[in-house]
Image 1 (cartoon, rainbow, N blue to C red):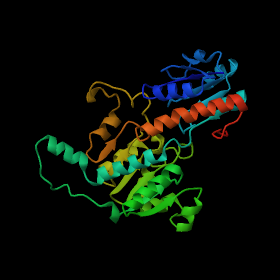
Image 2 (spheres, rainbow, N blue to C red):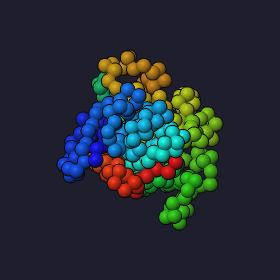
Image 3 (cartoon, rainbow, N blue to C red):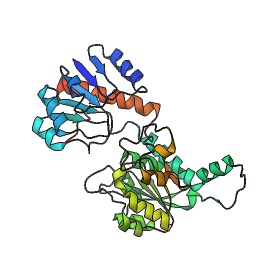
Image 4 (tube, helix red, strand yellow):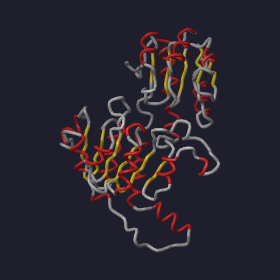
Length: 332
């Protein structure tokens, strides 16, 4: 049995080696390169591939994998929105993902960023660096006095709710699918518009779909409270960046924490050497603001999460090869 693991980072390699030692019957080959048209041939002779990337899994790549007899593909991440669905079905491919590598990691990071916004830490860091140790006028707000609207109550959304409650915040939520326990508590509102209208903080935890692309647009922002805080650790395409910039300029949005960005591919996880060399003017606009926190898609990035992403994906791929099935199989 042979599995080729693509896009293996230095921080993932120890966990991949650990998995290989625990599964000596499997030959594990790895590369730091992503799966695309230039690297797909590395999968020749393999029974399955394990991958992680933000660029598309194109029909051309998937067709080539199938032509090599490789029909077992395991993603080390949650999202499958960049997988060509038609090619999956046409070639009879089996795809697994890692639906929950560490919901707590993302939830903890989201709330941490909110607290940074509420306590004006970016402003104070700048002031202190310039020798200004005065308090005023940057007085903070308290989370226990606020209503947090959680959009999507899957594993991550529910983990975030637990933490927000620990701060004493009032919680309301919206989701097409209601969690039974949260339903009993009566926290759901009927529409996104109602969530927008009642929330002091909007915490987004939805997957990316064609239907919710740019769900936070000019119209959505217009329905929110003045001075709302917006948190997006989910997917960059959920937020219309231009609309967010307009909402920040007008004061409609008082602060934003973005761990994702709609044009992040090729920008995030890259060292440009200096701020001026970042090749995205809208992103630099956001980065310069004291009331905006931008991080390069690191909410997931903990030791536990990286371990789970590697082990769960490798286990799933092995299961596909051995049995043709996995508890992490994605239905297209």
